[in-house]
Length: 522
Image 1: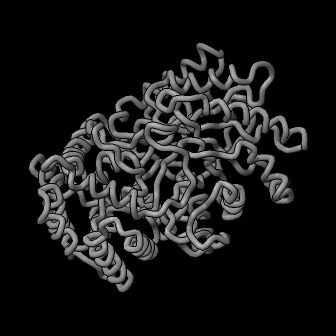
Image 2: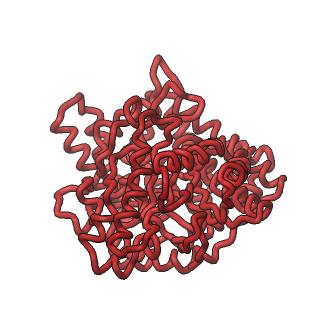
Image 3: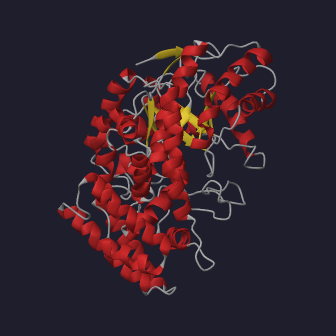
């Protein structure tokens, strides 16, 4: 376990696993008394305690796009006094706020967190608990160093006089391939700004590379390359500035969203070397046996501190950018392709996600209210669902999003002589694509392909991916056969739905049955 010193001078550990509230679970938690898989705001305190009990050392407390309990620290120590007396918040167990980006999400809600941090620390210290219980925040959609410095300024101005901590540790969350070239400038600008404005040295950085939104924005291969390129940029910044970095990666159980699951720890670490903290989302924790989860978390705690980043040279980074463009172009153009005044793929996915995919968390308003749009880059006219529902909608149809654009991307990469470079960077690409092919519903794809050119292009991708991997299309295990049957049922029901609420209920039931077979919702 790595121990470092914060800006404010206290010691902290670098956790290997960060539990998050991403609602990608198909099953309900074993401890839930509800009949469904939903986790309410009232349940999130118990959930945080159970995260720590699994061996997870950090919990993300999400105030971006959802409501959050600002008194969580006091609530935990009062409810589980013995546990948190032994495992002090901020010393042994970490709760890290994910705050709204005020440059994108208007309103003053971000200030509540800054008040809560100082107030909770003061209250907990008065009861004899660790005085720096809360000291770190995550800023989503970080675009430049001024936003990171702005967070620090907001915290300082919001807590005039003596405050604990004196300064926050700010985690920049970098959300897409377009920001890859900006990473070192963002980190360096923040470090120099802290020194110039507050005469304070940043002693380490925990930069956070997103994985779900880059995939939804640019497709599987571009998202994988972004993850590898970002960790290389983080490490180059570290070597150049002599400041340690401990990168975080946000990954779900679905391969399209990163593929981190209890039964794939070794593959994940091989695929994404250099990340020191990874997110263990709801499917990781609730769609696998608890003992498997404990074992997997222990494995992450053991192996991630030893994981070293692969630093890419200029030639390799040029290939990363070229390959991201090669694979993202067919993906984006297909998802947002217009035919006869509509977008066949985007419109179908939006409808399925909205009408038939269950919500397993209570969230605040989305686009136009208290959050911001998730949309395919350069296609602002389409507002896609959040990444989990986006993936779940594709999987409900039996059309894994992993394949979209990849078959055609492979053809272009071959023509340019880049397949060797791609496979060297992504040694598990064939395995990931082979897994995706096992969940393809060929009948559904044929049905949609008859109706639109965009879906026909996805069918071409499936054919080309099958040729590349040498693997058959369709299920190979009894559970995968059952998954196929559930997607067939869903598509047949979709054809005759017509707004009938009884049919919609059946469709959601098929969605969940299929999700439980593959062990994630989306």
